[in-house]
Image (cartoon, rainbow, N blue to C red; front, side, top):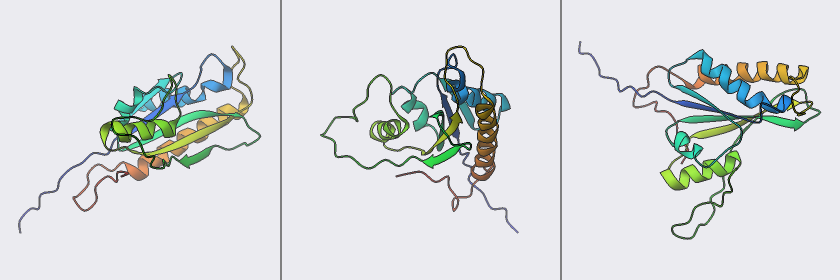
Length: 176
């Protein structure tokens, strides 16, 4: 009996929590990212930023999966919302990149990553319902519950998508 050689490929996750931590519930994204970072899970990187900037595309290009975490405005919803980020191919003139300002949205970052690096991770937007985003306020009950639910959702993603080893027949899926 001969041993078979298995190729190992570690999937990587990037959690991007964004929002203003000084404005009450708007800080839920950074709070989630900091908590995930504290888990110290190999192959998982979590970053906390006040806003999404084009420079994040370089981090995204190195990941297999990205979850953006943000406050969901003053929503009447009481549960988190998770949606895949789908970018439509846009015809670009040779040598141009998607239009971006100093701050951008998750879909624009996915498109920029595709344009600059030739690939991009599978990505989702995880939104947490909020009650107020007033300067200096603590998290509302709705935001605290949303943070807990978001962390459970991310934990489930990690359980589902992060596997210690993949055989060549089971690579980490990449978006084309």
